[in-house]
Amino acid sequence: MTAKYQSLKPGILQGIRVLDLSRMLSGPYATMLLADHGAEVIKVESSEGDTSRRSGPFNESDKKRDWSGYFISLNRNKKSISLNLKNKVDLVFFKKLIEKSDVLVENFRPGVMKRLGLSFDEVSKINSRIVYGSISGFGSEVFGESPFKDWPSYDVVAQAMGGLISLTGYDERTPLKVGPGVADIFSGSLLSFGLLASILKSRTTGKAQYVEVAMYDAIVSMCERAIYQYDFNKAIPKPEGNGHPLLAPFGIYKAKDGFVAIGIVEDTYWNVLKKIINSDDLLNDLNYGTIALRAKNRNELNKQINLWTKKFSKNELVNSLGGKIPFGPVNNVKEIFEDTHVRKRNMILEIAQPFNNGKTWKVAGNPVKFKGFKSLKFKPPGLNEHKKFYSDNLKSIHSNHPSISFEPQQSDYKCKINFSSKDKTVLDCYACSFTWLKSEETYLICTIKKSDFINIRHTVRTATFHFSKATKERDYYEKAVDILNRKLAKKSVSDISVVDTEVEILISVKT
Image 1 (cartoon, rainbow, N blue to C red):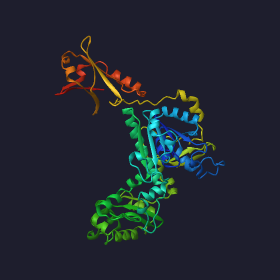
Image 2: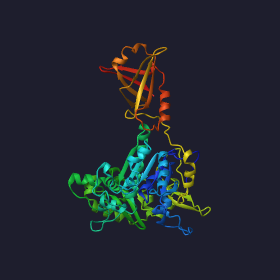
Image 3: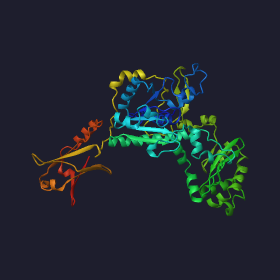
């Protein structure tokens, strides 16, 4: 069921190394999204392994029950090492990996990492450019201390407290949990975005970044409609069953052999649907001619739509409505496996089984596609499968220095400017301040004292800008700074812009 890829490069995230301490669903889903696209994700497990290894289901041919479907789905394309972080030797080894990694991800309860000596503050001392990502039920005190911060939490708890369950089901007496683990998966997706945004920032500033997602927060943001509904009219939104409180027809409707979804918002689609149904009642614009009228009369309208759709099979409705209005059949997983869309879009991956020659597992694919790059599909790791590799090669594993242009920041670097005439230096000075301006090109803008520059202005032929570390911290960006300094050496006076203000001189140069 894999799409044919020709002349595609490896994953777009190749060159990013992630240390993944997370377990079960939320964190592993975040790092799965990265691993699928080429990031080197090193899964750090206890001697028993991630709990999901034992959660099932298991294939009949897996006699040893080593390969849980839960684990396979979330941990393809990853590496595995087993460490006891309470053991001094293992902790030292892990800290050496931190030095050479871009990202650390964890989803322990707040406080656990601090007790292990691996809080953000401690880890950023080991690697001053690390991106440190955390998922927990209620977050840490860094972004606001929750009264529930010490509570353990799983998906169902976040669905409940974040409001999702209160909006799901047919009425208030029978609340329903959403089927898939949406609190975990949505939180993981948000963290994946946060990690990539933080990597981008870290690579331009050289500074570590902490990014956090609380599952409670994630579900509140998912239920955004309920927030503004309550603010606007003080009514507490209730379960709407398969309908919508503001739109109709918008929901799930019966067919002879199952159900279909119809979602009408714009009047143009309503006009198409009512002509297809061709009922006198529905042609009456006094009741249904506008969005507001359809919402007001949605109970009766939904009944009439149901009376019409249940006369036909799903396939017949596909033929009459598909492509004409927002419409789709309600698919079960067997139908998803058989759907041409899923096959063409590579949304079910086949992963080779390590113990069964020629046999594959099938798991959900990655929905994020990048033109020119393929999504990977390597088997998930055996427990501790890669420990020997990393132990034997630790010294030779390179840190992942950025290939993009580095922009030193004033809090960590100083900029010395050397102005020369035809054959000699006429002024050496440090910029009072500097910043970066990005448009189509990137410009360095420095300020210097007017009194230093004004007397030598007309003799200057070249300017050299040189960055150096302003603090005693290790400079992980030394090579990038050297490259930048070479680019900014001996710039002709025609390449720089000088602006004389009342109090200082502004010098700008394209990098």
